[in-house]
Length: 263
Ligand code: SAH
Figure 1 (cartoon, helix red, strand yellow):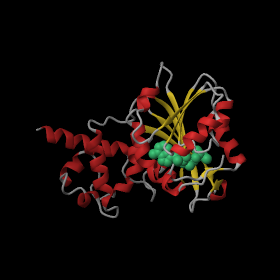
Figure 2 (cartoon, protein in one colour):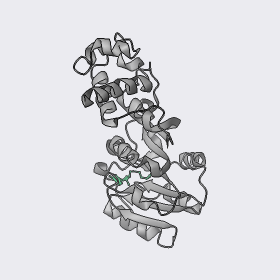
Figure 3 (cartoon, helix red, strand yellow):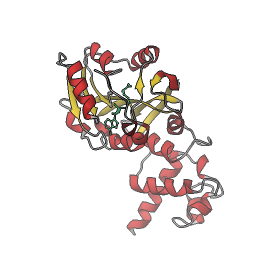
Figure 4 (cartoon, helix red, strand yellow):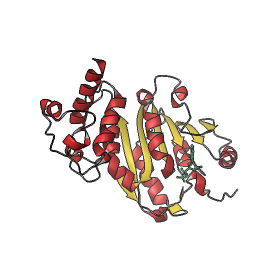
């Protein structure tokens, strides 16, 4: 069966066998694990995963591909195929026993950020996640304070997970080739949050505000939320810019605002 790639579903199918092998070998998958693949497409990663004998659930939006996948893998009893939108899918419902989910996906770039946050709402049932993303997004996820790429995505993702850029994947590894470089990222949800955050929505609000004008000092960018003296009292220099603040600093700012709002 053939399938014409659909742009609106972000379809860029992996066809470079070296890259597929490289991805698979960095996963350290084994048969007693429960894997979930998001956006299996025509099965470039699905097939080698199934061959490892592990339990696999796949979630695919494109109904034509679901038909193709059902046909291709009809002999497999370790596979469940879900015809669904991953953004709305209840991943926690897949957990049958205590075994946490290992998630993998070569994701459509337009949904990658909301999808990661959707998954992180259920972080307690996830062992780890490996995603193919636009390299630019992987760089932002993994950026450290002080880097130009450090921003909201870095702070929020690093609150939830340990992040690691594994390797880059060039456009010609896909059919059709995307315009940009891709990369594989490993995200491992923290067992315990690295810092105490009393209200995650407030952390997000402070981070969005602080980075809304990156070149401004905190004193200015956070003016509407917090007094300069209050920033100083947290041992944070109000003349700094958001891009040098650690996750711990953002947590202190947001916890103060939560405490103040309670009064
Ligand atoms: N994993 C395959 C396909 C990658 S292309 C490979 O590496 O070759 C991205 C895949 O995600 C496509 O199959 C596309 O149909 C699917 N997809 C797009 N949006 C989706 C969504 N919201 N939920 C689930 N799958 C989606």
